Image (cartoon, rainbow, N blue to C red; front, side, top):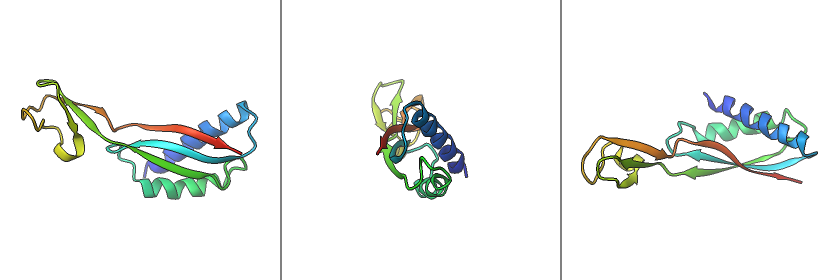
Length: 114
């Protein structure tokens, strides 16, 4: 379960930013999670709640997750398509010469403090 490691990393980053900016309470963190990142959102949310309760700054902090759709580009025909639906084979020209453009990201997008 790599979700716990992701949560610890994100919380450490938010706490560092909180100290730098004199925050006393973080109420919500929005994370953008790629559709093919391998992160299980339910596990991430469970880990988040547990880990936030170990920090005064983060206690009770809500996690909001926004999905980044996976998109692949075909290097042969230049068209893009939804990765999950079609995989690594271009649905337009049937080429396997494709590259994932987005959908593998894991990032903290927004922090709300009160």
